[in-house]
Image (cartoon, rainbow, N blue to C red; front, side, top):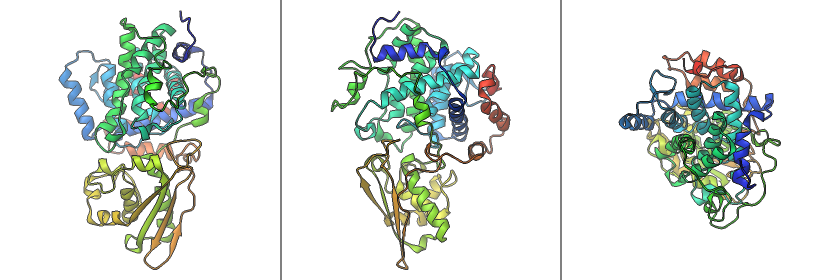
Length: 453
């Protein structure tokens, strides 16, 4: 029985009480959106080179347990290894949903599907566990006054481990003491650096977080213990992430389970397979391209104004590979002009290296504004794009507050299904339409193993 009342204890008790959590239809809708979008991006990314690396890594370990499927195929591995591979695949294309300064679903969903398959859990239990993971992540990430990205921390990797541990502990029905040890272990497994954006390590962050969250729970169940105040201690998790000390380690998490962050922040669904920091500017250029029938040869200069953290993430100014291009505003703008769209078809090494695409990079100018979006602190309050044409005209997007697909500007009805079917086109070994139907009715699924079958 827990006798302390610090933040770590409060989150552990919240995880242990998941069975009593009130989940209404609006919450279920958001969570199911996260499951649908993540499964789509997992299947779209399953042939990416980094996923092959993960599969070979798992195979080389030679584990004999096979209780969860790899990417809905016949291949089976242990749950933590399935989470490792599947979460890496889900993040490999940088096409997965966004919230809480990172990508919550691409970590939580693969871990819960793998554990749910091992435990023969029902869909409603997965939804509840997801909410626990999301709320735990939200409670921690919002306590820092400074942006994690600018300090070098990738929130998906750092908070994803702890969110996953809380979610998996809830799914397994662990008591508060074991849940607390799980969180304590997870806190020491949290890591992931922004400097690795644009490389294979970035999608590995999601895989590592999902697998490590399961590892933390496994270790706690086997008897490993952790200190009871690891999150709020002056030398603990939150303090370590904030060298300037601008962190709230004291305020009780009294609202847990009552006022849900997921209803306030929701999930933003990506329309483009690039870093979300570029999406508002992509919307702006595509609106101008289609509205004025712009061609690449019409443009003299493109001047984008974005946030400081966005500019830090969009670090690749002359990308040569698709991995690098995902973090390049120059590429995003050039692709929109050359192809008239920014989709999976453009995220290809050959397209990135095209002479007409590379030539446009020099026409891009980037300025930063030191403002903060109230719903997503890693973004500026708004982005803006001004395009100077060779005929002397000046086209101004005006302030762009939300990207299409953002929680503040949700996808239109049918857009999520269209994205799912686009991502799974060419996946011939799975009945993807039937899989989508089950995901749309996840709360009614009695045994999530049927999703893989």
